[in-house]
Image (tube, rainbow, N blue to C red):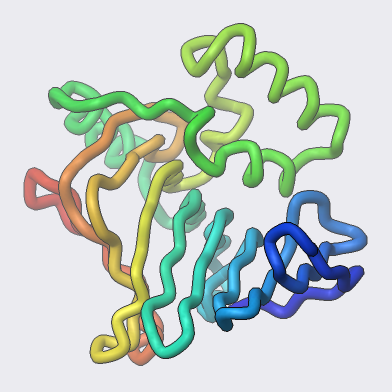
Length: 205
């Protein structure tokens, strides 16, 4: 899943070996006595796209001879999207009925920490605790083409792809905020080397 360089230690209470990154805060990899691999990291899930900035920030769990699950924040930046198109799409989803996203319950801080130093990260964590989501400014993190703050995926061996499960938390299209959970799916296909996003209202990307 992800190479990890750092300090190896043994956790007596949870009976697991843990590698903690020396340079990257809050990034780790563990292996317990049942053969379960867990970790938190920033990963591109194996995609090589030179003009596209793509990453998933979050937690993963790999059970022996079983499924690989990933729960995180999906960040995609593509230079070819037109701002008017992104604005129109954002308005469609933002106006829909649905549950709003609580960023404090997502992998937002892990993503923010990967983009900023420890001082800014501490300031942002305090601001979220005191003010919540509404006071956060879009320039802080909504500068990418698509940000999905809450995305849960399971590895599908037959499809050789990561497939989303449950509701998808749409954060933004470009600088235009959505902040809603919607129906749909996301597929990261390793054989074809592509990413498919499908959200309700029959809108494809």
